[in-house]
Image (tube, rainbow, N blue to C red; front, side, top):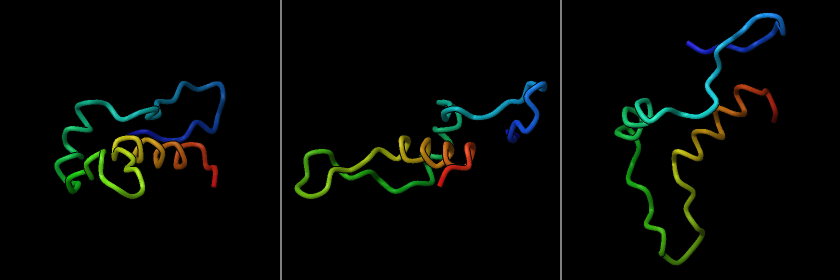
Length: 62
């Protein structure tokens, strides 16, 4: 399980982006994405959103 690197002298594994294997498991839980050419606000792909959520959790930015 990934965790935060609080000590600079230790090598710590963190998730930078979602791997294809993990995305295959997660994508089954999500609803269908909105088609790209529909009138209204453009849809953002769920994978990009999840990568952004992980970035905020990893860095602690608000």
